Structure formats: C-alpha cells, structure tokens
Length: 62
Image (cartoon, rainbow, N blue to C red):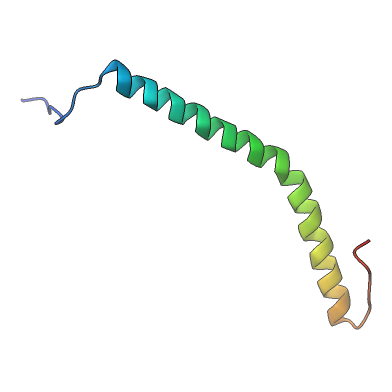
C-alpha cells in the first residue's frame, strides 16, 4: 500500500507561519469571550425595550 505524498514539504517557515496563525486565532477567541457578557447585556436590554414598545409601554435605555 502506497502512502500519500502531498505536493508540498513542511518547512520551518511553514511551521512558523502556522504558529503565528494559531496565536492570532487564540487572541480573537479571548477577545470574543471578554466581550460576550457585555454584548449579552446590551441585547437583553434591547429585547426588553422592544417588548415593552410592543405592549405600548416605554423605557429609556439610560
């Protein structure tokens, strides 16, 4: 059984670039986690405000 040989070679440069990409992806994930509670709060306030408006009541966002 022959093993598959990809049409490229993994070089130190490729490994370095993959490591940099991995670090960047991890950084984005951390930012998303940090922003998530604030976004949930803002979305909940908007949902409540919209529901009250449908019912004919008002509530300021302040």
